[in-house]
Image (cartoon, rainbow, N blue to C red; front, side, top):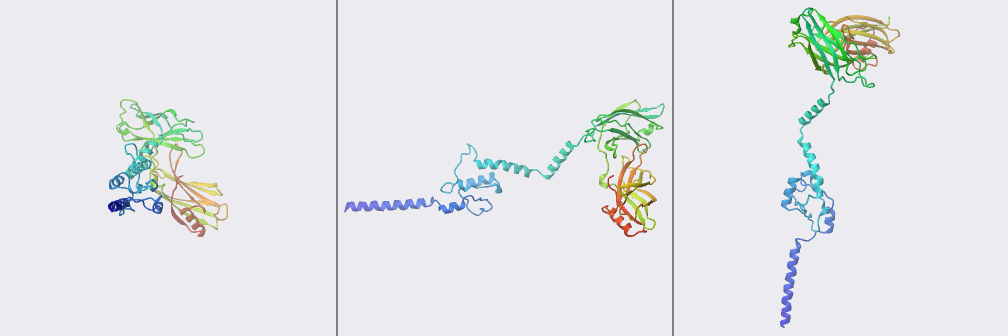
Length: 407
C-alpha cells in the first residue's frame, strides 16, 4: 500500500504543477491568428486610441513617442510585431529604426514651414525682388556757372551700363532729354548714338539769363531714352538733381547719379476725357467736341503737364483725317471746349472709328502720349456704349466721360 500512497502524492503534486503552469501562461497567450491577421497593415493614430490601450507599448515608450513624433506623423506597422503582439526592441545607441529615419526629415521640413510666418515670407520675397531689380546704368555729367556771362553750363558726358531695349540686337539707341525745373522753359536733348549701352555724348548746353541766386531754386531732370524708328521711343529711366546745396562758385563740379525707373503714378490711371459726339445722318457728318480732361498723370517730376488732344478719324483702319486742340499750359485738369466736324466717306458708322490721343507738349522734342481712347462699334466699355448711342440717336449731341488707357 505504501507505493500506492506515494504515487498518489506524486499525482497530486503533478496536477498542482500543471494548474500553475496553465495559470501563468494565460497572460502570455498569443491572440488568435485571425485577430492578428485582421490588424495587419492598419494605421493606428493617437487621436483614435486616446481612451484605449495601445498595442505592444509600455507607458515609458508612449511618453517618448509622444514627445518625439507629432500625432499626425505616428505610424505603426503591425507586421513587425512578434508572436505576442509586441514590437521588437531596438538598440538606441547603435542607430535609429529605419521608420524613424524616414520620418525625421519630414518632421524637420514641416517644422520649418510652420515656423515661417507670412511676414517673414513677404520680407524674403521683397528682398529677392529688390536684388533681382535690373540696374538701369549710371549717368555722368558736370555743372558750371560762368559769372562773367551769367550763364549756367551743363555738360552731359556719358552713360554706362544701360539696359538693352532692343531684344533682337540686345542693344539700344540712347539719347538724353534734359529740362530745368520747375518752369520747364529750358529743354534740350542730345544726339542719338546707335547700338551702344555705354554712350559717350560729351555735349555741352549753355543756358543764358539765369541769375546765380536763382540756381539754388532749380532742379535738373534728365530723361534717358532709346530711339525707335517705327514706334514711340522707349524710356529707359530718369535722373533728378535738385541744385539746392550745390556750390558752383568754386568752378566746375563733376557728378554721377544712378539712373532710376521713371516715376509715373500709374495707380491713379491715365486720367479721363469728356467728349461729345453727334452723327448727322442727313449730311453724313460726325461732330466731335473735346470738352475737358481731368486727373491727368504727371509727365515729369514737376507734376505739371502741357496737355492737348489729337483727334484721328479712321475709315476701314486707315486714317483719313486729323485735328488737334490748343495746348493748355501746366495743368492736370484742362478745359478745351473745341469742336471739329468730320465728313464720313460712307453711309453709316460701321467702318468708322475715332481715336483721341492726349499728349504732353514738349518744345524741341517728340511729344509724349499721356493717354489714348478709341470709339468704335467694336470698342469695349464706355467707348462702345457711347458709339452705340450716337448710332441709335442721330442728330443728338451725347457727351460722356471716358477713362484713358496707355498710349
